Amino acid sequence: LFLASASSVLGHATWQQLWVDGVDQAKTCVRDPPSNSPVSDVTSKDIVCNAGTAAVAGICAITAGGEVTVEMHQHNTRDCSEEAIGGAHHGPVIIYMSKVDDATTADGSTGTWFKVAEDGYDAATGKWADDILNANCGKRTFTVPSDIATGDYLIRAEEIALHAAGSAGGAQFYMSCYQVHVEGTGSATPTGVSFPGAYSATDPGILINIYNGVDVYQIPGPDVYVSGGAAAPAPVASSSAVTPVASSTAAAPVASSSVPAAVSSSA
Image (cartoon, rainbow, N blue to C red; front, side, top):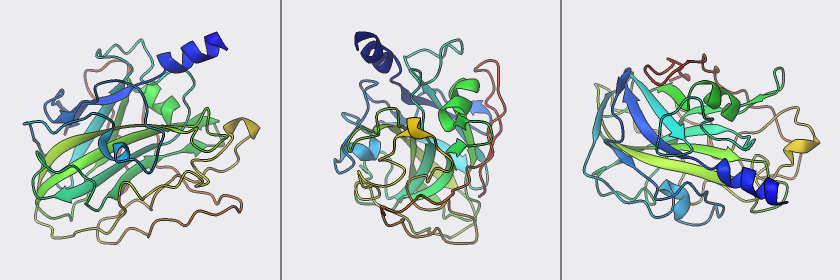
C-alpha cells in the first residue's frame, strides 16, 4: 500500500507552459497551481482553474485559426526524461476555451466553456491520452477555432486520471487556465457548459473501473466545437453502457521540449 501511495503522489502534475504557433511563451500567461495535487470534487469552484490559483498580469496573444500548445509536467522542470504525468494516471486530455471580458480578472466560474480538443482511449492500441502526452514531453497542440470572435479568453487544459475512479469521487482532475487574447475576423460565440456544472461524479467517463477492460470510453463534457457549427449540449449522465466517442488524432512523439508536436483537433 505504501508503494502504491508513493507512486500515486509521484504521478501528480500541472499544466504549465504555453506555445503559440510554435513559439514558447513559457509561463507568461498561466495561472500556475501552487501544488501538483489534483481536484476531486466536481462541484467545487476549484474545478474551474484548480485550487489556490490566481489571475496573473500576462496575456498571451493568439490568432483564430492558429495553433496553441499546452504543456504538462510533474515538477517545475521541463525534463523530457520524466513522464509528464506518471504513476499510470491514465485518462483523457480535454481542452476548453471561454470568452471573458478581461482574462486578467475573470475567474471562469460564470462563463460558458466550449471544448476545442479531446483525446480519450484507443482500444486498438490500448493507449490513453496520457500515454500520448508522455510520449510528447507533456505537449498537446490544438487549433484555435477560426471563426470565434476577437477578445479575451481563458484556455482550460485538463487531464482526468482514472486509476482510482472505480468509486464516486475517485477520479482526479488536473487542470490549469491560461489567459489569452484572440485576434481574428470571426464573430462566433460558441455555446458550451459551465464549471462547476459540466461534470457529475457519476458520469460514465468519470465513474469507471478502467481495470475491468475498456472497449469504448465516453469522454466527459460536450462535443468538440467545430468552426462554422455549434457544440452539442452537455451529455446527460446515464447508468446505461457508454457509447463510443472517437478521440482526436494522436500526437506524434517528440524527443525534446524544443518544438511542440503540431497535432490539432478539428476546428
